[in-house]
Length: 252
Image (cartoon, rainbow, N blue to C red):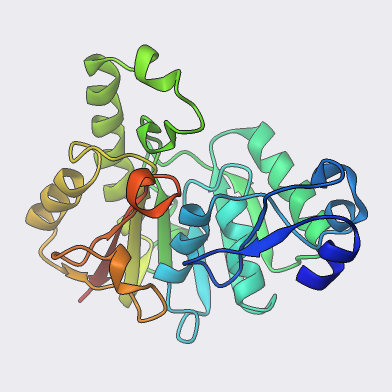
């Protein structure tokens, strides 16, 4: 792909941490208006977001629930890592986002994603419970980790907003945890830098759910991105990517 992009007039550079990323420093035209995009050879995604998929052990994971799938950035990346084999159920409460996800799956040639609407503010249906090797919760958050690209967030985010997000994150994580099978993993992540949305949420969950324990990320995630407690954490000023947080919880 890199050589083909160079031939087409782009200047791609491999990302430092993600094994799948290319940075287009200069380009002859917007990448979204090329055959590379139209034919599903690539998708636009920040490097930190790409690495969330590597918090999941793809070698031992056959079934994944993407519990807050949005337009499918992580679900489609996971499908690529899994080589379009296995099962991914992607849910979101927005019908518009689910429709966009389905379109993206078609564009990228992915057929292992089943997409449907569901709201994690309520308990999951019985048919979901205990059925997935891995449940990914990319929780709604303040987005303060994306300030370098969206500086206006700091002017519009209030303390009331943060309390609202934290309340929703606790409910969503609790409800999503019911879908994890014994021995499976629950991944919690945000694009926030704030402990109120990150480790505080995880610590409270672990206190209330003693059948889950904190695990360290797989070896595929570089040590520079893992803190002393075993959380995945990226910082814009240190790693030149969005600020993300991730925690891996195992169902004992």
